[in-house]
Length: 178
Ligand SMILES: CC(C)(COP(=O)(O)OP(=O)(O)OC[C@H]1O[C@@H](n2cnc3c(N)ncnc32)[C@H](O)[C@@H]1OP(=O)(O)O)[C@@H](O)C(=O)NCCC(=O)NCCS
Image: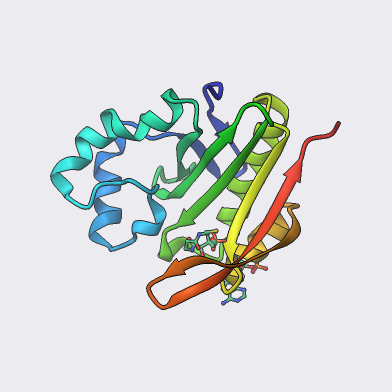
């Protein structure tokens, strides 16, 4: 299981979701900003309380990773989510994914969160490889990966199906020092 995590950067706090996030999460849902919430977040507002209390923590409990909320230090506002998942403890590898609220994009928040979480993972958790997969059409995400020091390893051709059809996936990674 990953150790408990709370990371402060210059402008952001990364920490596990909790019941105190109910108002912010409902506002994100109301704005149709689901990409700023982790996969598995309920579609129904009535289920958000239960999800924040229990289901959102299941990934961490099961050893597969963790879902973290990203909030602005200055305002406390929910900026987005960043998750570690598909953790392979034998190899010491995990995958990272993230999303930022539309109104808060292009301020460098995803890069700041990704950089900080990756450094924490590679130095504090026993994980030696963090992998990042992004649709090759997703230019902002490719740029975030590069700015956060990830190396592009290759392309998984037609490995992703979205509403408009099949897409190639770019694979990036960062490794710990040996
Ligand atoms: C990808 C995402 C997380 C980036 O978040 P963000 O906080 O805006 O990221 P940053 O501000 O750190 O960096 C984004 C960069 O992309 C650039 N960018 C934005 N739109 C772009 C476009 N259409 N083409 C090229 N670059 C673009 C921004 O200018 C910025 O670069 P800069 O710092 O040099 O100005 C956000 O767009 C998002 O949530 N998208 C939907 C979910 C998603 O795709 N998640 C990633 C899955 S792998």
